[in-house]
Length: 373
Image 1 (cartoon, one colour):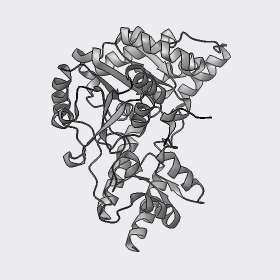
Image 2 (cartoon, rainbow, N blue to C red):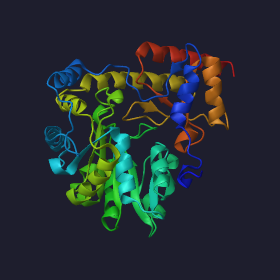
Image 3 (cartoon, rainbow, N blue to C red):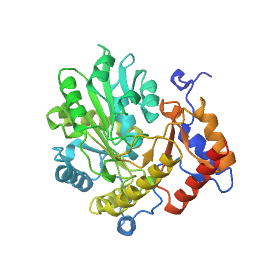
Image 4 (cartoon, one colour):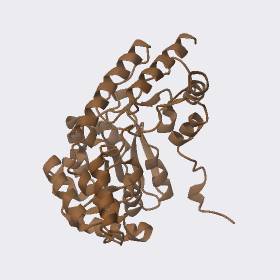
């Protein structure tokens, strides 16, 4: 029996593949996942428990609990000056479902999606599942910054969507306000959407394309509670879009999941009142440490300004970054993700959101491995 042809070639994501390989090696240190070492803060957990005790185990409205959507709209207005109403907020099962809903909701077969690389592989997967064609823009030559000139070269009459992920996964680079402004001028004249994946914004506030409020009618803004609040397992995110667009996307959402879990939405409302600054400060310390150690090993990397990843080049060591990662797992007991997973062969993505003692041990092991090559 034939399956959907868009599934052809679809595999488990590379991040998970290398993580699973590493978990099979006793004592291997995982620098593969964007998984904060911290437990979800106690006040957030307490809010979920209280919701259960209060019997909040029934459906909310399809787009989410109105109290949470009001809190999100207020949070985004206060923190980023955004002008979304609660009716323009959709609570989703993590940023993953927000991205899937947004992309499948606006793309038609034959449309083109501009994806700056390196990039999280989900954008490519969803574009293909929607029957659209990914168009890649290599940013390596510009220090992983995306320029308006590069976008303009990629735009055709079939372009429907531009993906912007800043702070970026996997590089940690934050797109400059100057570059984003030039891109905004380009987008203003074209009939297309911009998917703004801002899920790492909460770990270090920066200007994002979402804040060009004059282009609101073109923007599909994705956020998540996972990274800033150490809530990866809770699987709650949200999508913001102009009301006419969001109303249609909410219908799609309703046919996929009905609504996000009620008691978890209560916890997310508490999360918005919690300050993740201490976590962000610890990540900044670890960023400085890993960048210094990698530089000492001769592994150059563009300085990350956000998220919790560093993306050093290994092109001088190998022509096969995947094979190098396998050797690191087996010989050094350190797991990283090859850049080829993100459309950028010759690099490694290393996450530094693990515990500091593990990060130190991983760097010591990596240094010894390189010395023996």
